[in-house]
Image (cartoon, rainbow, N blue to C red; front, side, top):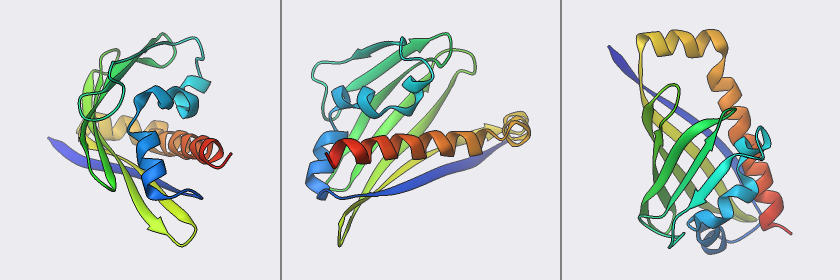
Length: 151
């Protein structure tokens, strides 16, 4: 039996929503703030052409961080929808959204990942504290994004 899960981490960035949206919707920018590349800076990365908008994709392959592809499936004024397909080890598919909300000082960016987990996956995730670890990676990535956009 599967159950839904959702992880969400947010960060305020001192930049207007349109600037943040443009940056996020272009996957050629992702490697500069991708928190997982810190674990393996030598991962093989491939970005589609075009690199921005619906249909753009970013793929990675590494012994340390696994392999997969993320594809932008939707872009609106405040949301970027991404389909994640993990192709090594624990093969699975999940959905990601980058949600942008205007604030008095810029933009609140939420990194949301949701999907389904089997009972065995739920037990493993809880025992290994994987949601806590993943939330830290998301927070680290958003901090890197903040530093990049606030230069």
